[in-house]
Image 1 (cartoon, rainbow, N blue to C red):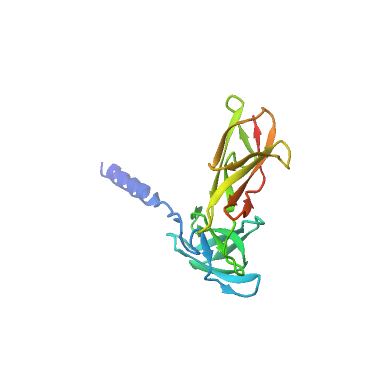
Image 2: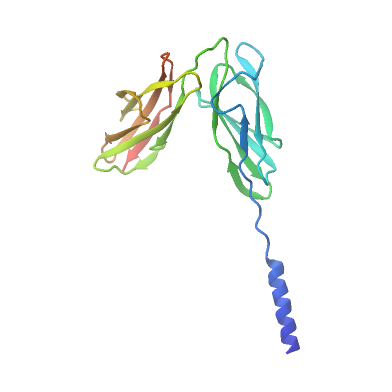
Length: 227
């Protein structure tokens, strides 16, 4: 009996010893600067076309390094920089809208954590008004396969702008070619419902945001296919 008890104890200890605490995963950083929708005036001016902009964020938990992703919203080009510190500086073009976010990384796991995405304008020479930020297409997403309801789909997007400007409306281009025609003008909502489509067809579309000064920005061309 004693031998049986001893064997059971050994097995229990072995089982307990084989258990490992789960690997802690990174948590998302909290962005601090440049602020959301800021007309950035804190950068160090390097020339008529460039300035040095400092990015900072509150550190994420269980994080060994960060990827800072900064995107030029006009050209759609992105840069990715790795740093171990919760801050980094980059030389950027002036008079250009950018978006940025941070990905928290740990050497202990492949799991990462993405911060929210913020936008800002890197101020240019004498700018007193800024075009809207390019609208973010939210549905259908790029290259998505869509099931129509009664031969119709809904198109949605999110627009934003740096103060003090305001968005006065959106123009929507939609069709079956890569240069779709304008189908709606001065939409005040951020959606257009009940758009007629045909099964088995690929559609292309983009949204133009407009402000009160006549400035515009283009979401870029998106496409989706109807099942």
